[in-house]
Length: 298
Image: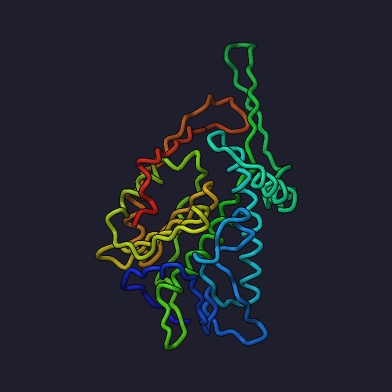
């Protein structure tokens, strides 16, 4: 498996999909035998809502069958979770067709956190706080189905690998490269928290970096951006799924990545009284104003 780096910003050919006839798997980098090779549509038709145009804005690669199955399994879960979150947002109007698509995914996909269908995976908790001697207040909290961060990072990594494979693809050798150094996911955030201090800080930090990829497909239901530090062998990446989740991170030289991580702020937490149960801290989510959103701007 050969590591390579993208040196120039590639442009997407207008009105044309991209299909790589790559000899090595776009996800693991190993050679593929004819019996193990499958074709993967990068933006899966079942990942974004139905009837979203994919034909002219999709990337198709060859991948090992097992790698392809792993990606499909992750996409099934996160398609349901992200579209469920989209439907539950009070700021969006969902048409009938999309509502039916979301309901079908809700009942068919299983949440790994609860081992139940996504629609049945609301999470509940109760906090008890002593407000004065002999008087206790109880609060019940209900959260929508939650994403497993480790599985989200695995899917984001596959998305980044496939597009980096295209960025570094050599049509003569029919091979693409892989990110140099380590792969460092930072955080996953729902749309209600895209304005938190960490998301905003990294967005502003990489705004001046060299854009290598800024891709928006399926009418904005899939986004990805890759940027390179102007001096270091360090890259930033970000993906957005179904206008609901954003995952951000870095890859490249571990020491360079760590120096950037050290500049990111910590998220402010509010402490609850010592006798609060079962948890002791919380924080307020921060929305991102659309006029301040430059994460996927080229």
